[in-house]
Structures are given as structure tokens and as C-alpha cells.
Amino acid sequence: MIRVHHLNNSRSQRILWILEEMGLEYDIVSYERDKETRLAPDSLKAVHPLGKSPVLEDGSVKIAESGAIVDYLVRTYGGGEFGPNPGAQDYNSYVEWLHFAEGSAMLPFMLALYTGRLGEAAAPLAPRIQSEIGNHLTYMAERLGERDFFVGDQLTGADIMLVFVLEVAAVSGIIAKFPNLKAYLERMQARPAYGHALERGGPYQLGA
Image (cartoon, rainbow, N blue to C red; front, side):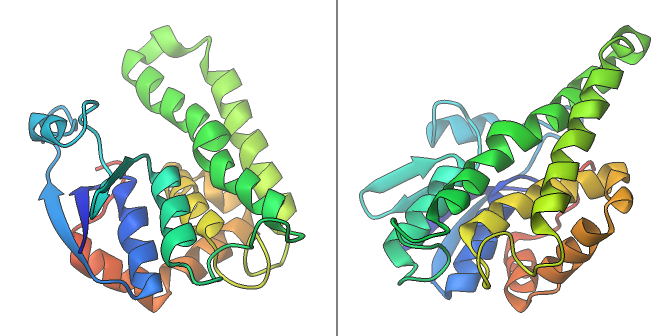
């Protein structure tokens, strides 16, 4: 049985979503953020040395990092869906988007979160951070265009990864500047499997 170590209001919601899309059975071990610090509890360090979530266990396999988990699930249980096969025309694009979500897109959002706590001391950095956020979202909007998905004509692991980025953008309100990304996010959140993942994972409110 697959087990997901799930932290509320975190990237681990991605993993519940893709498991629901795949129709796989899984158990959840839930953890709650500290209400004051918003940090993960120390009990997660017993699961992974970094004390972060998600962590997925599948038999003898234990794997962290949401992108790596999505990749593992697609390769192991995808059955030819949720991502193109190596050598396919869209495969390199798929891999690029899979890593772009955390490798590029999330960095300026995290910088904005942390520097935002510094008040005026962060003012010199703010223009560059906001510029990079806009740059990445513009890139995503142009590449998506009017298509339904970022790769091919069906949901892939790339979409699972990228939706979290857009949910963060929605919290800040900047997504309103990109109507096609906003519409795409709403379509993804309207998927039945996304709703089922919310029911399993509990309250999900980024920025809370």
C-alpha cells in the first residue's frame, strides 16, 4: 500500500491529486504546521532527515521531493498515461516543465515570502523578485496559449507540478494579469480527482 506523509497547506497536496487521478489506493499520515511559525512538526524528521513533506513510501521505496515522487508514480503506475514515453516528441518538454516548477518558478515566490518578513529592509530586492515572478508567469502563459494542458492533449505530471505554482500566484493576486493561466488553474481545480484529493487531505489554504 502506498503511504503519503502529508503536511497541510504544502506541496504534498500535489501527490494526493495525482494518486486520485491515477485511481490508486493510498494511506495518509497527516502532519500539521505549527500555528505560529508555520513550520512542519519535528515528527517529520523521523520520516526524512530534512523534516519536510511530501514523503512517499511504496513497499521498500521511500522517496522525497514532490517532483521526484510525481516522476516515480508516472513511471511506475502511469501505464503510458500522465507523461510521454522517452523518445516521444513531447518528452523533453515534459521533463523541462516537471523540473521548471521547483527549479525556476518557485524560487522568486519563496524569496518574496521570506523577504516580505523583513519589511523595509527588503525594499532593494523587491523589484528584482517581482520582475522574476512576472517573467516566469509570462513564459508559462505564452507557452500554454489557449491549449488545455502544458504537454500534449491530456493531463500529465507536468500539470500536477505547475498547478501549485499558479495556486501560489493566485494567493498574491498576480495571476489576474494572466487570464489564460487563471482559466487553466480553474479548470484543473474543477477536476473531480482534485476535489477528491482535497477531501482526503483536509483543509488546504496556501498563505494561511
